[in-house]
Structures are given as C-alpha cells and as structure tokens.
Length: 516
Image (cartoon, rainbow, N blue to C red):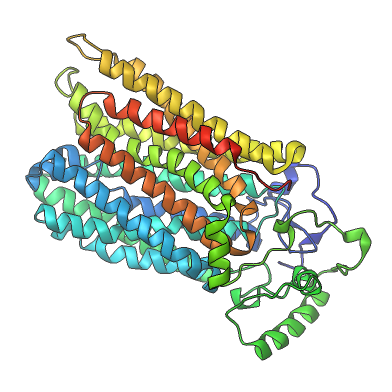
C-alpha cells in the first residue's frame, strides 16, 4: 500500500477514474476495492499486470509444441499419432504435478518469488527444446517445460492477496484470461515465426528448433526479472510481514492461531515498525471501531498460512475443495484439449479438402479459441462478482455450473455433427467453427466464474486451493486427451467429453456453499 492509497469503510460504486487513480483500500485487510489498471506507480496495479504477464509468457513455451507438431515436428522426428498424443499427455501430467506442489510453496513464500522461480526453471528446458531428436527426448523436454503451467497458481494467489472480495472475481478472471491469451498468441507467433524462418532458407529441421530460442527463452527470463524488480509480495510489503494487518488482530481475538513461516520475535518487531510506518503514510482507523465493522465473510480476514497436517485434512475433507476442483476439471480440461487437439483436427479434416489449408492456417484458426480469453474469461469473473452482490456465494456457484453445462451441451452437438457428416467435402467448416466457438467461449467464461468462487473456499490456504483447482484442470486435460487417443473416430471424442462435462456439473449442484 502507498501513501496515496485511500482507506474507506465499504466498496465504492464503480467510477472510470478508479482505473487511473490510486487504489481504494479495505481497512481490515488492506486489499483494494478498485482495480487501478492504468496507474503503474501503484503496487496494486503492478501486482495485477505482472501476475498475468508471467502466466502469459509461460504459454510461449508451454504451448509452443502443438502448433508446430502437425507438420514440422511430427515429420522431422518421425512421430506416430500415438506418440504425438503421448507427448501432449506428458506435458499435462507435469503441470498437474507442479500445480499440486506449488500451492503450499506459494502460501509459505509468496506468489511473486514463486512466479519468477518457475519462469526461470521453465526457461532451461525451453532453451534445450531444439535438442529433441526422438519421441523419448521429446517426452522428456515437454515434461520439464510443463513446469511453466504451474505459473497459474501464483498468478491467481497473487491477485487474491491484493484485491478484495467485491472485485476479486473480476481481477482473477482478467489475469487468468489475459494470461490464457498466451495460448492463442503462441499458435499465431510460433506458426508465423516458423513460416518466416522457412522463407529465409532454413530447413524445417532447423526452423522449428530455432523458434524456441528466438521467442520463448528470452521472454521467460525478461519477465522473471521484471517480476523481481518491479513486483511486491503483499500490500504490507514482504510476504513474511503479511500478518501485520488489522485482520490479524481480529483473528487473534477470535482465538485463531496463525501458522506462518516467520520468527516470532522478528515478526513482533516487524509488526511494530509496520504500524508506525502506516501511521506516517495513511490514516488507518482501528478495526475495533464499530464504524469500520466491514467483516461479513472469512475472505475479509483470512491470511495465507503454511500447510499443516490439520489444515491439509480439513481441506481434503471439505466439499468446498472439490466443488471448484471438479468444475474446473470440466471447463479448463476441455479448453486444454481443444487447444492441444484442434489444430490436428482441422489439419486432418481440411488439409486435402480446402486448397491452401496447411499447418499455419490450422494454427491460426485454433488460435482464435485462445484469443477469446480476452473477453470471455473476464466476463465470467465479472458476472460472478455481480451475482455475488445479490445472491452471495451461491450465486457464484450456480453461474459457474451453468457455464460448464452449456459448454458440455455445445461440445456434444459439435461431436455429433462431425460424426454424422457424410458429405464428400467433409463437415462444413463455418458450422464447425461456430459450434466449437460456443464451446470455447463458455469453457473460458466458466473458468473465470470458477476463480471468482475459489477465494471463498478454504480462504486461509488460498495458494493450496489455487494449486488443487488448477491441477484438476490439468487432470481434465489428461482425461480428455486420453479420450482423443482411444476414440479416434471423427467427432466421437467431442461428444464423449461433452457428456462427461454435463454429468460433472449436474452432480455439483448439491454441494453447499457459505452465504458469503
């Protein structure tokens, strides 16, 4: 928080000037009621932009293989369709593992340092991508590049610790959606770069390998450096000082023990120094003042705690853990499957039926689904915040499940259309794009709605929750990739995935949620 930040009792009504004005802050938890997108001097704005940018550049390597596989990599390494599918699954398994592991690390050490660390670690196998010479070496490289998929966890945990419940759904959806734009951008960038290198006289063998060194590697290292230089751990400053909040006083009075990885003596001294610092920078009213009694939800006072056996058991046994996790398995899992498989589907269907429909064009059309994240995922989070104001957490839940159900129905329709097409010219391309655009849009809207709900679930371990939910999204991607592998018949994989998604979202209707 800066000296220019304003502290008010309740969230203000939206005003356009909030976009460039200093953050307006909740006095209890120092989270922002507003989203100062255009004020880069404000640490709230920098946390927002660095979180999505870190996730965005991760895609430049994490998703760099699928757009180049149908023609370039598959031919160069002499891969079978089964080996291509195996490589996609290996990448998803790596991200599944890392997202589970990163959650507790984020709660302990903070999202900023974890985000930067993941980008640097992911840059190493990205730089070595050109050394792949067989299916097995491709599996190894894609497994370690899958580390980059773990950046989603600090991305969501970072903004959840900076923005208050009135706007956290919108913020999480914006950073998730803009980060996911990296998936669409990667298809466009990598296919265009590969085509340009071919035109300069490079062979396909050299061109696809050079592409990794030219774009993903420097971008990952540059953004990691930006995060370390310009980012801030928490509104109070360092992550180790996050307990220095008025909210902590409330928790201590309620008898809750705070589990933090800090020395108690140093913590006490830091807390005293921080209190004096706040007095010099901004007027903060005592939380004992009834005029500032703005707490009506656990989200208002929850502080990230380290994972203990007790908290782990509580998380595992809570239905609130599995509500967003299973819903995300359906929505993000399907999005991953579409991103990974659609270029192959388009290339197989139309390469010989539409003149000039090559790998590059298949990649461009597939990138459209990823670029929809520009508006679709943020819209899901925004509507989640809107329904929350009227119906509380239950409104967020039903909005999330509705999106997942519509996505499932449209996926079934697309699969049945592909399976039932008997025309010699194949399924009508415009119809296919229209149907699967609906699928993609509601998948992404559902993802945004999901992470509007996540901050209300096990709020004291937000990093762990982001990791669990994010990893279940990858688990869904693995399951749906296996469906593609074992159901190669045209369209069949799509309607099977749609049915799975419909059933999951219908079952989750009965899971109870807190009022706020």
